[in-house]
Image 1 (cartoon, rainbow, N blue to C red):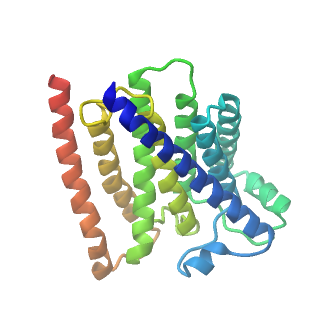
Image 2: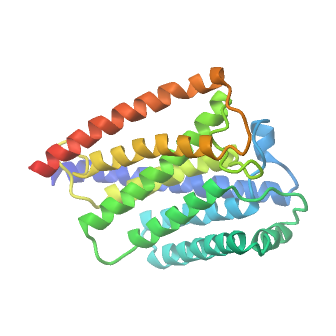
Length: 275
């Protein structure tokens, strides 16, 4: 109980800060689009502009995280439902070739004439984020449910890390489709969203003597494995883009560290399961 009292406010503060950063970036991107500016290309020339649908989704998920931290359950439910509905519509449009109607509508409301389509890895992030928010906002608190939410948050965080490292090293690890790469600001929003979801699960979990949830090793293992899996997906789905050997070396530290973390976390999780 003493560890829970000590660590609880830290997780709560991290949840609020992460949600505020994600929502703030999403809203700032929407405002910049309405003012006919391109914040991504001004911040990082190698980045494409963020999709209007992606900015709206990150703003909604960030506000939903703030709703969790401030205990506004209806706000969290509504925003998670909005995000889930938008993502399902976008996926259905791509699956059946119905055209970017939702994205066109959002861009038209912002007065944006020229915009980029949402990246497939951004769609995966928003879908996992909406599912985690639905699971997180419940009147039934189960340790297994919180563990699943934290694993989803860790996966989201890992996807953002790989995309951000791609921009830093010059390797297109943020591209799952050549015509729709994840923007740099989307990668930043992905990292903050994933971190906030993990914090929201840790906030009400039973903690061990170190002040961490008992399933935290499993969450670290899932995130570390996702880093390597996401890197492999970006390499296999490069659509003719070449990965230069010298540039790929820049991803080596991330890959090695993630492998070591996954092995150590898996061993720790097995030890905890044995007890």
